[in-house]
Length: 448
Image (cartoon, rainbow, N blue to C red):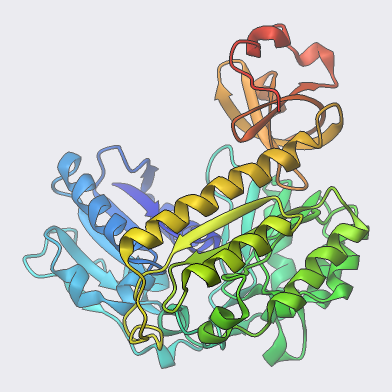
């Protein structure tokens, strides 16, 4: 039997999909790509925006076009929040909530298509168990996403995640270490610590993220550790200092901002203000100017006037950050923001998204340009095309160089000499690995 998986959303979802996939492997299923014919199709969904939900519906219809008899299973946040909406999509056979998805195989009595989808979704208040997960079974992957925390106790006005995943919870350090050792034994070089609210790790079990980070640094075989994202109010100077002084931890921070206006931050029920956020960014850069810093921001939130959006734009423009993840606000059911007045027109939301996307490009270009003529240590992940391999620097800079596929999953020094779109182009320090002259790039590279 052949099974295909598709994952939408965050790195945590990827870790959980991988864990579900291993259950199928143990039952002698063959895992295939989503565009291949399959007997079972599992879609792990996201519900952060309405766009994520639309994409879910599109993917289901796409898979049924080339695998019309596939048994379609939908799990994840969208399944937890809107199971009946998913049940209305023709071709869906099984819908599982946040608790049920990890026992997916128990619900597969047979693989006959269902006239009416079966729904198994328990109340989110019952989601009290922490189900371990990590992604480390996809061929060629060099980084493993390790789930260290789940759920969230924050009540941000726009967010459905607490409704989809329940309260914050985590495992003791020794359990996380066991999984990290398993990942190392599989040959992975980098671990990315993931969760809904990673900085909240251990709060309810007498521990904290800093203690976990100390323990993980001693895992043999893992050469890099990266934090996927951390809330600004939970990013302490102690954590910053430790990361920037460590040889293993990556000098890369992804810190959600959401708005550069204190008025909007208050409406969003965020736990910090712009002054505190800016202090953290400045502190990081005072310790290491080469650190990569990514920022999440939402545009078009109710009440975001032209003046308040301009405040966000100027705040982001002044900060020494590396890139933005820009989200267009969309109304989410059962959130306190859903019924806020002063809605922003969809057209204006879209225009503001484009403005910040352009700013992100400028920030990334400026950051990348600062490395021209310098060396970066790159963990190569795979081929971009026949002659090029691509990977990431510790500070999350994407690097491409001409070299052999045998360098995948190795860390190499690369001298950066140009930039092409969102990629730094460099030369491997080990010249014997170069197959063709670097001037292959000359026609397409734009030097900034």
